[in-house]
Length: 256
Image (cartoon, rainbow, N blue to C red; front, side):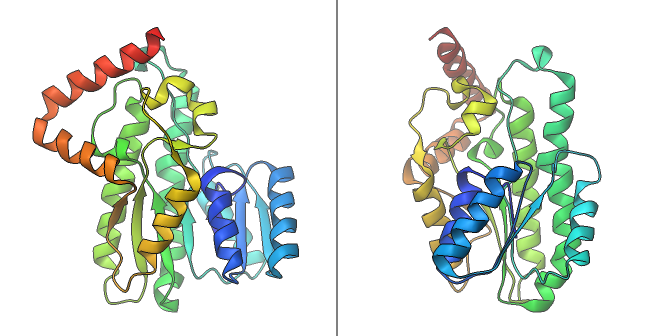
């Protein structure tokens, strides 16, 4: 099952996994895109693809999704929690309703969905649980304050599940891309990347699948050497210097 599957990383995960012969449950709020992708994957790879149209930013969406899966008698053996969005704005200027939706989708629904399915994932063995975090989760991010905080939660939560799931056969991993060429910036705002270059979505998904194919995948994966170097440098620099540098970078982006 892949959430946020109608575009971006979610759709690419679906294409890669369908090509491997995996049957899929695709969840997103845009029915037209979801049904088009499901038809494409069934036609090209002969797999069963079940689309579920649902807005996971609504309260209680995790329980609702679990109920729909149960009603349809679907056997979910792996889960990729990809649904999420960011808001690029000064916190005091951001829309309060949007902030709540962001926290609900990125944190609450991801947690509810993980809890609803992890029992069967562990019982099955051999599957994966991937929660999509971000390199923003490794440091506070001015003008992306809420997004970075939600991804810090996802990172910490998922790494703890990695430890709890050792020996069960379930491979758990937090995926932390940097700026990636997806629709994320159409929603968050074009300046949200701080002016940094964007990695291709194909590369991010390929690196994630390569890591998951290992006998013992890491608890978290930062995609790309440049991103790993940046995160290592920020830890060495300390909080004050990192925040000053990030704040200056985002202000420069705003002036462009």
